[in-house]
Image 1 (tube, rainbow, N blue to C red):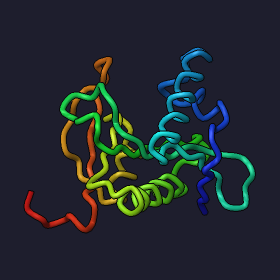
Image 2: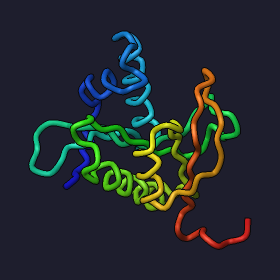
Image 3: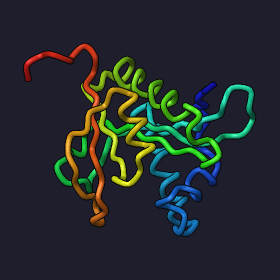
Image 4: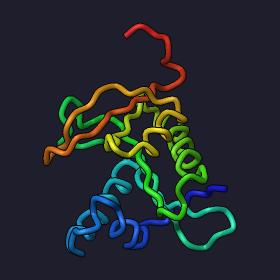
Length: 164
């Protein structure tokens, strides 16, 4: 059902239609695109466009990146995963499938010890995706501008059960 395109940068709609970015001007969209492209060049992983098998048009994005500054109680160097889909693509399993593929990349090629996902507390669908991935709710906190988020974490399979 899912194939990830490594083509970058994604089309502008993937930024412009995000719930958080819907009201942001083109300048901000371009800043995000530049930052994401820079992350790919520097680290060899980042955001990917989701294109369902047999389709030509992207329907969302899935990402693996370093968290960065701004979320209370999280280290900026942590690995973060995330997903976003067009509303017409919700509840079809695409987010879970794409995010599972990104987790495999994180724990395999990238060698991340764990990944986190920041989910807006009212976004039950994304919390469900996190749970389907095996992520555990760790705590609630705030982001840079005070918006609340729930933090979910998945530990690399080879580290599960080891003493810290």
